[in-house]
Amino acid sequence: AARDAGKSQGDSSEEEEEEEEKQQQERQQEQEYYIVSGGFSDTDWSTFPLYAFDISTETWTDLSAQLPTPSSSTLQNCKQSTVRPDSPNPNAIDDDTGNPINLWNYSMDCPPPPRMSHYTVVRNDHLYVFGGLLYDDHGGLFYQEDRDFVYRIDLHYLVVAAREGLPGDMVKGWERILPRIVVPPSASSSNGVDVGGSTGGSTSSTTSATASTTTTTTVSGPNRGEMKGGYWRKEDKVIIHGGLRVHDTPRDALGMGRQVDTNLGDVWSYDLTTDTWERMMPGGGGGGGGGGGRYGTTSSGSSSQNEYPAARTAHGAAVAGNALVIYGGMAKVEENMWDGRTVWSDLSDVWIFDLVGKKWEQRGLFPTLKRAYHTIVAWDEEGDGNAAAAAAADPGRVSLAAFGGYTTAIDPLSEEAVTY
Image 1 (cartoon, rainbow, N blue to C red):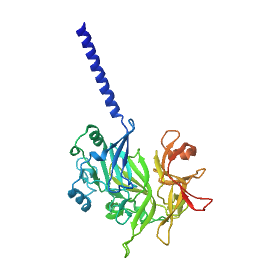
Image 2: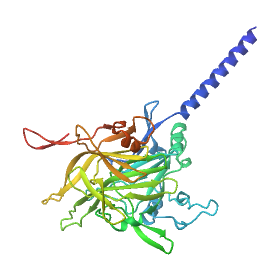
Image 3: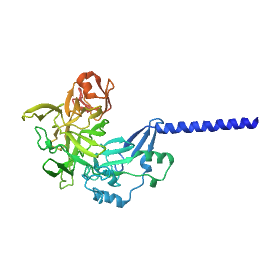
Image 4: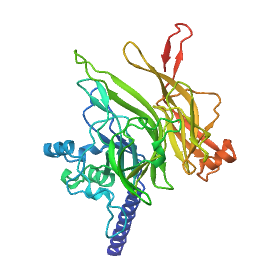
């Protein structure tokens, strides 16, 4: 009887252990993380940190500590080369699949240089990093990378390595590619919209073919900082809008330079399957008001009177269904004539961009709330996910939630501008 009792207790203990292990595996499968990358602090502007916040346990993990340190030769190669020597033409077709080659099969092992104001998205356990502003600590000015590089890293193995304490040489580090860039042929004429320098960015050779000719041109991509947007789940694309492009003036005899800011208003999509940037809509002009202007032509060449928002940076943006929603931000008014500093104006307008019809529509907001450097979430109250269709049928169905940011107002006592 004692032996039988012991056996029963042993079976029970094993079953409990198996059940606990099963529950642990289920918890691990359901784990959700919030990823923070890059940025600067008062004491650190020379690294690109990577952290994961476990939503279930409310704990932070430094994923950067799991990464192998790249060699000096690797870093030097990343500075000197844009693509691998064995990389085929980006327009080449994979013989096995009949599709364009996978650029990540020819990626370089290059980590992102330190930066802030970049855009990130997580897809299939990979973190993608786009754009951003780099900092010259000698001159005290910001700048962009020379090319429209895209970086990514596999988060799954990093999290496992952190949990299991695996050595760094067992973890795959950062990858970098130079993506394809497509600008529609209609972009050659502005039709009232500045499409030349408004997009900013660097250049990449792109081939476009028509029925009779094949031409190779050099086009600009969306290389910038402070761009905002979201993930268009239906098309598996990243959507970005606006942002800030900077360039530095030549240094004077005292070695002093000046940063010139250009805020942007164009819309781009990044196809995560083909790794291709495509400009969906050229940008609007600057200006301190909430309005932007008009764009487009009819078949007869007359203005179609479509409106677009003012170019901006530090705004909030989100993708809901087939719509991009933007709110607020800052528009460039002018440059101070004495020191060249940019004078900004806070915005309070809300716009919806139909990602399918490629058309802007302004929405009313009451009361008007000027806001910059905030975060928003957009959703359809009916739950079908199509914010654009919902707005057309019933404007009350599309909702925004905004958090944080700041605004500027005039102090009634001192009559000075106060930011809070």
